[in-house]
Image 1 (tube, helix red, strand yellow):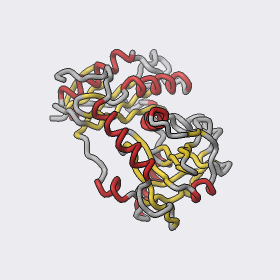
Image 2 (cartoon, helix red, strand yellow):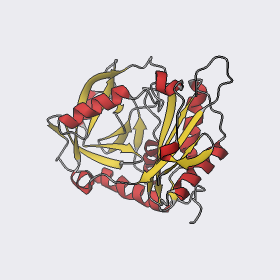
Image 3 (cartoon, helix red, strand yellow):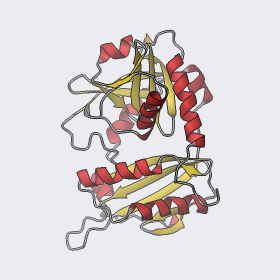
Amino acid sequence: MEKVFLNGSLMPASEAKIDIDDSSFLYGIGLFETMRAAGGRVFRLDDHLQRLMMSAQTLAIVCSYSTVMIRHGVEQVLQANGLSDARIRLTLTSGPLRTEEEPRSTLLITATEFVPYSKDYFEKGVRVVITDYRQNPKDPFVGHKTTCFGPRLAALRAAHEKLAAEALWFTTENRLAEGCLSNVFLVCGGRLLTPPLSTPVLGGIARKTVLELAREEKIPFEERPLDINDLLSAEEVFLTNVIMTILPVIAVEGHTVAEGKPGPITKRLMEKYEEQLKGRKIDEIIAGN
């Protein structure tokens, strides 16, 4: 029986209940984190929790829980479900919106067995499309991982209908931003490029990892504004998030990226990322390992 962690307690998923006045249910006011456990370790849990807390503070989303309590909840959920390799979802909302009551957060943590993307995606690469939707730099929720996720899912569904793996977003100022579920990287002239956080884009945990790996591997990189010409002239393109890790892109709409196969810098970073994912010496060691 699946177990979840809800508001400080571990319970069967079938018994978990969310208040009908919850801020996320009514208005999409909430945050979430998708995390990866590999070999009994939660990859970069501290980074996930730091991002969560910073977004909660910026967006005035109530957080009644300490990072220690949340870490404990993650540990309990993995243990209770007997999971070592898992996909973990943490959802935090401002809780019930009743003016006569003291605000209290809703915190839900779930974990399911990790199901990887198809091997063909990594070996052969994927195709992406460009959504007609635009990312508004003036939207206060942009750059945060919020539960107001409908537009992303709509764009992703449209991409899948076109047999593409992802849809890329541009801003209202025609700057390359990110994917529905991912950050985007280009390789131009042997140099790794990605849109700066000020675009704005989500400060992805996998994005941060890739930039650290590039520094370690002495791959020149730059965070700078990018446009459609940069995208279409790139020698390599890839996407990142903690579930897909590094996903090579070989086509954008009908345009083939370079030779239509994963490039050398992408493959090098994929290898180093996998090493770090499975061997990183971090504090987030789940009990039993």
